[in-house]
Image (cartoon, rainbow, N blue to C red; front, side):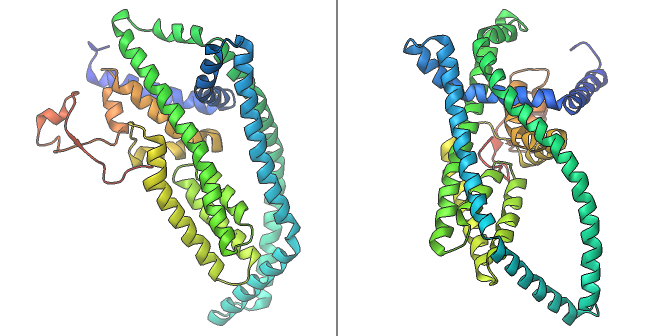
Length: 377
């Protein structure tokens, strides 16, 4: 491929990217469970190795980690559903508070415009009918989505079991793609990929735990209603880089507005979320994850958006670890090294326009990016 003209090489690379994107779009229902299972398998590997070390049968060493994972997910679902149940019990008060907020907004609109209360009610009724029609279409789509979720969750344990059982075959398959001289670099890339995925996913699990306890606990002590629900929703949404935190703030404000007619709880919730997020981004998460692979903010955001458009929430969640793994691979291949530079956060100390040495595929002095991504990558 090195003997081909530059334009041909770049065209083949871009065509490969386009075909890969098309494959992900067309087959995301098949591919995303496999990728998710692969990442979870990497996290469960230490438990598997520990059990094998102490002479557990291989089948038991595979099944026990999967059972532990299922119990953990069950506890999370139970806790979340319990908090939703508390919210449902407060529905009469929520309805009353929402009505009070709507009346206040209506009076404010009437005071600053000629839009009377009667006209506002007519406008709301018209839009409500439109929303009901949209809700009907969404409900039919939700049924399909729900069924796909059950299929997704049903396939995961099967994929995890088979990946652990056939891991040596998969590793041999990877090594057979490369010449023997390149095997040390392949082995290094495999170990670094395992470390990145493990640190990322275990770090996210720890993050969900302490964010729920910290945020929910502080709001509970202050006296905010549904504090634990706000904490767990924000902690789970915060797993989606950049976008999740914004949605979590909006939901936190909405839950607070429905449980109170005053403004101070909303300001308190926003202030506590900002403080906890600052603590998480700058102190806690960097120490927990400690990954050496940095993805620049531009491609982190693009990755989240593209992942979401291809595979929804699971695509947004998996975007950063996939990009981090790709960067590890690109950095170790001469053909694709420039793509690793493009994804990374290591800026040259001087402009490549001025210094020719900064235009080559060699290690160059770098400086930290102006805008660092969260240390999850």
